[in-house]
Image 1 (cartoon, rainbow, N blue to C red):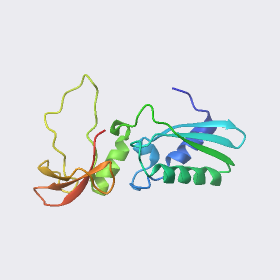
Image 2: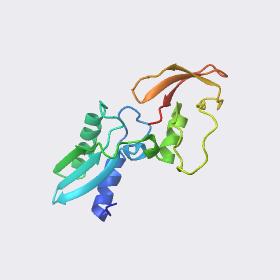
Image 3: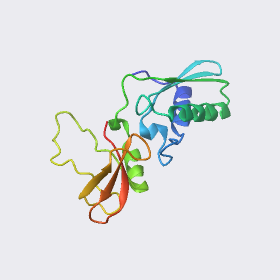
Image 4: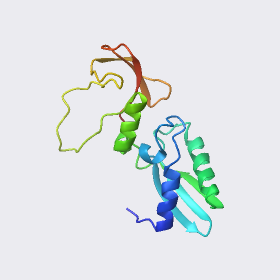
Length: 165
């Protein structure tokens, strides 16, 4: 892992604070799509982004928002590069991002956990409204391709579930 300079860390913080255009309750840093920020010279910065999936239509909006934020900070030349390897995973979502998703009413993906850790005994998805694990799948796709539509059997409320990838 490359160590960031203090200026790169500041630009990373600024770029990372941009809200996700499809899930504005969490930032790009919390979503885990912001990979690297590199200062290439005076007034020149390169930002590496990994989309949640290869065809993600939000990558253009993310790039434009990052460019806007860094331009406002005085960076004249901002290049946003899409990086596909290593692929993004739902394990990249921070704990704070998972908390915010649940608070917003979207069931966060289950964390992958350590490879040698315990294996979950259930594949149930917890309802973000009442906490019940008695939920059912309504549709494999919801408002975005990375979410599924589910319903809680206990409280009957529908909710989005951020799919594990």
